[in-house]
Image 1 (cartoon, rainbow, N blue to C red):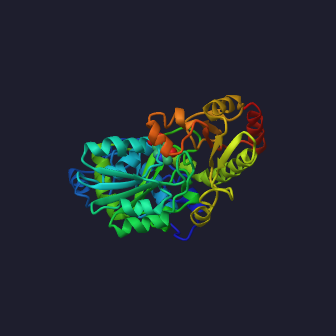
Image 2 (image 1 turned 90 degrees about the horizontal axis):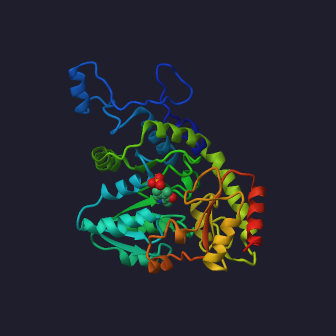
Image 3 (image 1 turned 30 degrees about the vertical axis):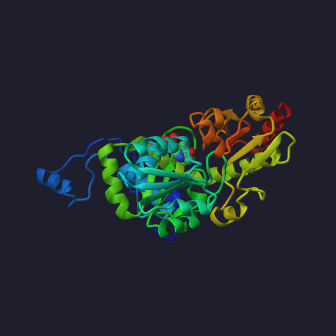
Length: 392
Ligand SMILES: *Cc1c(COP(=O)(O)O)cnc(C)c1O
């Protein structure tokens, strides 16, 4: 594999291994097990003297192609794919922690990630401190002697705040901790966490990598030492493996990721423009706008505003519901990263189970809506937004 190829090229060709038939598109190895020429060969494979495949819970040729392609795009030493994004988040955390350890994380996280930190971690004697991710002083003062991991997501869900990855990496490393970045909202093409100091990067491949609302999937990327041992053993023995079929869909998704994300980004900007400054709108939060609160950091660490935006309407929940219900093209869904543009009311859906006080701290008000830009014509999306604004 030519190491100097750019990400867009690697997204099409990275990790491809051809069978003896020399097929163009990646082969789908839809098998759970593998056979051996002899008992001796089986023994050697289990002793890892022979690097071949053993069982698809551990590794599978199609899944491995997806892992290798993601490693090439992200610049990681190794990777393991998982059945969902949450399996990747949980795996990256549990494979590195033990009772007595401490983790510092940004408060603004995907709802299920918060559940792991707030509910599951304490059950195993793991202490958690949540901070306001954009306040570096809070990261600094949260660090303790037993802080093993630092975890963040940027841009955040659903408020699209942008956290300074390089600065937090420095704080984490200064305290002897590793930094995990959930890079879903930026996609691997618009933000490169490893180059900014991250040690582990996780994705829900369900989102922009598949990008067409078909399959669930996830992946954990990191250095060879962590991935091949602690991460591999954790996943191998607990079993949240990605199915070969879904890995094949993800490989096909990666081939078009760049063209899709660029169109989504253009569409997000078009929607942000219609919303920005409208009388019914309190504020638009889009990393591509000059008025974004962390515009300086966006410039440094992202190569575009991305496919996601949030808007806060003046009229609270009532206005947010009226706006959502008046849309004719943009669909109401809690999902994101689909070719169809989707809108979510986080306070009553994705973050409904987060208690009220915590929700207020996150800035998730009744008037807030999150929009995931799809692949429609930007003029149609802008018209849909303008029409719905008229009914608020
Ligand atoms: C969707 C999502 C997840 C979870 O991924 P699943 O594939 O739904 O399990 C984690 N983090 C972020 C930022 C997400 O958007």
